[in-house]
Amino acid sequence: MERAGQGKAFVLMGGDCAESFEKGDATTIRLKVQTILQMAIVLTYGASMPVVKIGRMAGQYAKPRSADTETRNGVTLPVYRGDCVNGHEFTKSARVPDPKRMLDAYLRSGTTLNLIRAFTMGGYASLSEVHSWNRGFTENPAYARFATMAGELDRSMRFMKAAGVDFGALTQVDFYSAHEALLLDYEDAMTREDSRTGDPYDTSAHMLWIGERTRDIDGAHVALLSGVRNPIGVKIGPDASPDELYALMDRLNPSGEGGRISFITRMGADLIEERLPALAQAVKADGRPVTWICDPMHGNTITSENGYKTRRFADILAETRSFFQVHRAVGTVPGGIHVELTGDDVTEVLGGGEHIAEADLEQRYETLVDPRLNHQQSLEIAFEVAEMLRS
Image 1 (cartoon, rainbow, N blue to C red):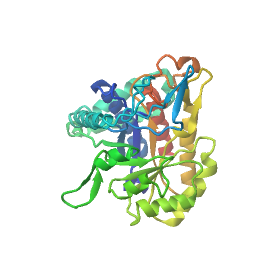
Image 2: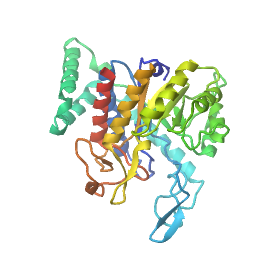
Image 3: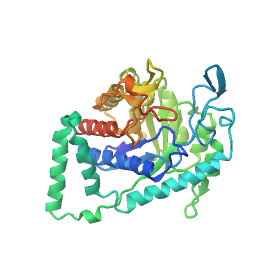
Image 4: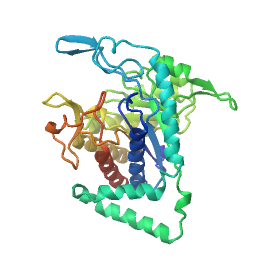
């Protein structure tokens, strides 16, 4: 994370908006891991630097919500807050919060981590294997504009093979887990002391982040994560001020340790160019190290005319592009991207090379909360960001 803040690596964070107990099977997890690995190889080539691969996985079971209740056909029930809290089914019994669900989340997170280890350490994630998956994407005429970069990547792989590079040795990758530290009782229970150093770590994930709604400097979420040694992300919306960022840096990273804190901006395509420059300039002037990551998803959520919560691919891409442009203009480093995605061919985000329209949303709208990029859209974003990294 420190190297990403210095422009010597790039962070890719991706995964479900909200993980589901029901869809925690091996196939679903494998497809998500595969998608992130495919994105990472494209970004690695485009950036000519290592990519830190972090899954919104193995713990993303709780979600903050903007409303406490949900109404359907005149019936009002408590809102769904993630499988760690209550059930998604719209019934009175399902929507009652159940603390025993935290135990289920703990067990399922462990199972997910074991599957991720198997996929990333057992040869499935080999460089040559991941590259072969990407060939199918670029053979689709809808993505012909990426053919040049794909061809360059293919030639590089063939050169490495001809030069005697041992692809058999490139079969394992580092893959980290992250989630929003929302449920304080759960995160507190998962905090352990390192037996070698005595330092406290939240063992529920490698990295944790604090949401835009819970980042109050005097709040319990900031207090809890100020006391653990994990890398910490903080979601930053368009209304944040430089003083708020300074206060977060003081509380979460008083020693100014590189890689400790990441600001994950989520401003919306219409606001980022107006609001981000002042924040980036202020943090640059302060001098303490920060890793800047772009979340181009949460500031671009809309409701379609046929009633689906969705996002436009064009807005996601526009915010990402503006993120790069602002940081380069200010002289700070665009250090990563944080996206909600799935390895399945869902129809939740409008547009992209597949030209998903509002009428298509109902075909495979499967998310529990917010719309996700599907497999093809995720790869499309990766190629677009790779071009930004090269320019």
